[in-house]
Length: 125
Image (cartoon, rainbow, N blue to C red; front, side, top):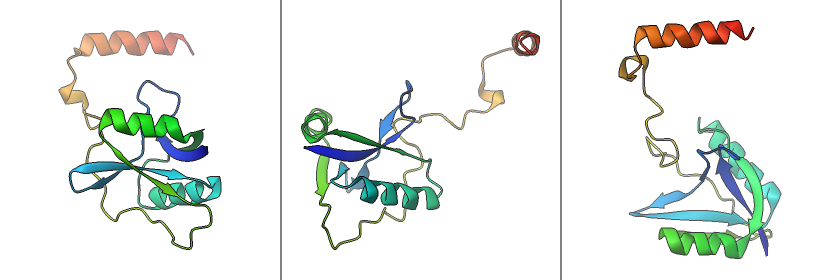
């Protein structure tokens, strides 16, 4: 069966699937309806979460991933009268986005290395 999940940084090396932390477990939400998944993504965005991409996938592929990663999963039916909302708190650092708060001071590049890169980039203009 085709379901819809939320993917962050889709198509990149830093791709990650949205999960909800419940206790010490993670759960992936699988939506039967693309519209419901899109609504959930917009609610995440309203909470200042990075904008996810809604992607259709085979439910068995998600279940297999959950089994291998030790995650739980939940199917959100299309006809559900229950409105699924994201948790009010988000994790500070995601598994797919480690060390995104690295500053220039944390960098191991020297000023001369940075100047060299800057000159090469300016040469492209």
